[in-house]
Length: 181
Image 1 (cartoon, one colour):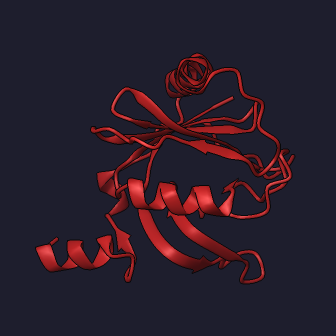
Image 2 (cartoon, one colour; image 1 turned 90 degrees about the horizontal axis):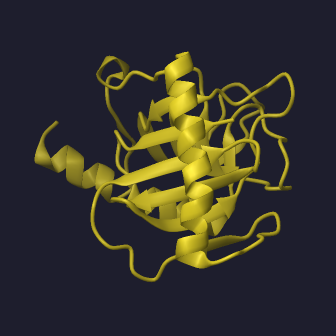
């Protein structure tokens, strides 16, 4: 990809995507265990970074100083929480709404494959998906949406709108997303 395409994508004016062969998802038993372990560790990191906090649905915490290093997203489906790292430092956490029964959110290790500031679902009545970051070839994405604090989506990970906007600015195509049980 040339510098102009990267700059335009970074500006948020155009979608940025990478061929899916370059960034395959990993849904093996080992990847699921690693993602679940990362979610368990994130709970401890939360205590160190933000103290003992209980967030209501739609709430989030975001550090003033994001530090340096690559971004990483860790999701705990059991707790309906997402954690954002910069290097080894937890810089944000939020409540989520993942896939409801029968439309389960996949677990394992994924990468952001495509980013669009505004996307509409091709499967579900043209539903808006602001700050969409697709992580698989079937339409599963992180995006802003209704966040009742329980599984309610068709498999995507819904985030509070302000958090989704901050996350969108922090991540790149290729950013790892670990989704644990």
